[in-house]
Length: 115
Image (cartoon, rainbow, N blue to C red):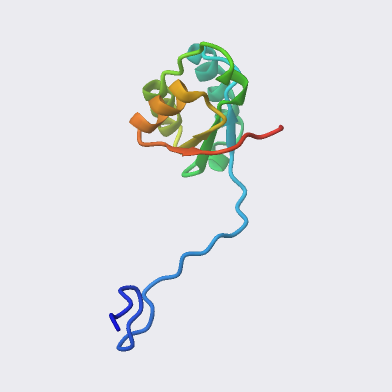
């Protein structure tokens, strides 16, 4: 019988993979106008800079998915990182938006939010 590559009889496990509840900031993109996003995000971050520092952020695309809005993910990711946030993925986008997000090495999560 071959040895289990994750756990063999000679050692204890080195890690566990677990899922748990986690509250994440979500940037619900309502427009492809990144100039407006930049101005409005600056005001939000100014109000609570500590809240956004090193915060993982999910980009919700549901509101722009049924439009022909091309999201400039390079600019958006750079903007979020510039404010100390860590964009890690998108959700609710169309095929083109999801493809562009993948090119920026963002995770593409399935489903949408109702918020």
